[in-house]
Image 1 (cartoon, rainbow over the protein chains, first blue to last red):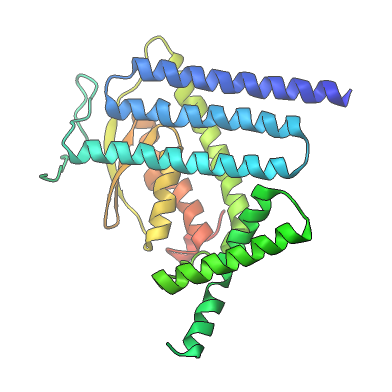
Image 2 (spheres, each protein chain N blue to C red):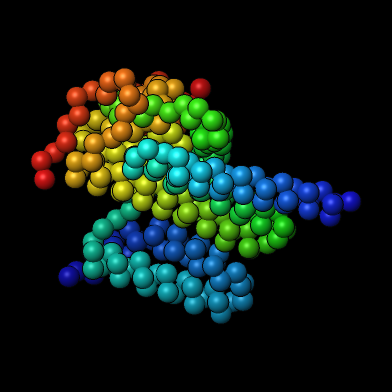
Length: 115
Length: 176
């Protein structure tokens, strides 16, 4: 019985991970510009990977593997956040103008540093 | 170099050695006495050597209290990530694709570099918002939609960071 519950949990988490990955890819294809593409590609993918790793944690049972997988999750989140920020910042510094919805005014006057 | 300063550096490097040793234990996953001994020797040597060469110390914010608060912070952050991710996912799969990106800026009351780093990374991890640039205390955030512009400024995340590192106005250092 416990085996069945565990398998169902693992399958559900893997499936939700796949949904997040799919969302990330679809968002990447639908978004209009670089800044908007950062959102789905860095974060939906992170959460997808996290739920797959969570499934692996449940599958492996309690052992040292759990700690290793948690460390993997931590570094995955850290690196994806940092690289999303790095891409956005370098684009902003080199003067890539963000896309706005037609008819929507940009909020503050944008200050882009001269290179 | 005097013996006293060498000994002081050794004592200062002990927290780093402890962190390295914990990672050693996690990654080797063996509890034989010779594995543990080897890990202890290597981590002590490495931390002493890096202090000797770089003369740096761990940021004073990274103490035991912060390490105890971190799991709570991580759990709260994960919940925020799931909520916001669900919202972004709904937008991505909606046929009308309701996004309207804006760059917003807000002033943060956090002072130290490490607090700003934690806040910027948390904002970037929360879907719908990416930290583009930090100048002084000003954060520039790219938001996928106007609905997401509220949170980075008013701040669940900023409040969580203030609680984690005990910075900013005292009334903000509590979770609720």
